[in-house]
Image (cartoon, rainbow, N blue to C red; front, side, top):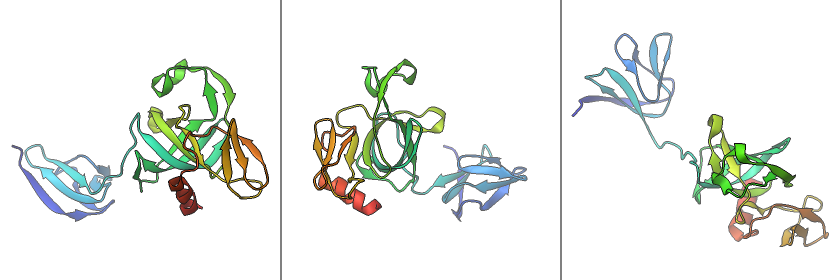
Length: 205
């Protein structure tokens, strides 16, 4: 069994040692010859190997391929949307991660598991800033979280009419406002309008 020596609670940026004494390990970085912490937690020294590590306290949930996320659209750019993640597999996330998704829908029948290189595109979904959406993680390419929105239970789960601010009702092909009659062509989830989604919208806005 490897021997370790524990040292006190630390915060990011705190000086731990110098590279002449130890090698920088997990959750540490080197700055001007000093080893500093990059996380909140407790640190330990692997004495035989002379490696200094930091054991992160309460690490954030990191989405994995196949995970289902719920969040709100905070940005539109070109054929892409940015989604601020609020739930990962129905568990509330304080991580502040954002994901991206294409507004174009593909001709691929392989679902989220198919390669983005294999996808051809035949049209474009409509989304707006503030929409609460559900998506599935299908790629972590270039350290970005990429979402698919093409399955029946994915897409917009709640939003409001941008003409009058009242609630939409799901109708074939999109959403219709209960008040002003405005129709919007959207990619809508099969369980659009659940109470939990309306509460999430109220919390964010």
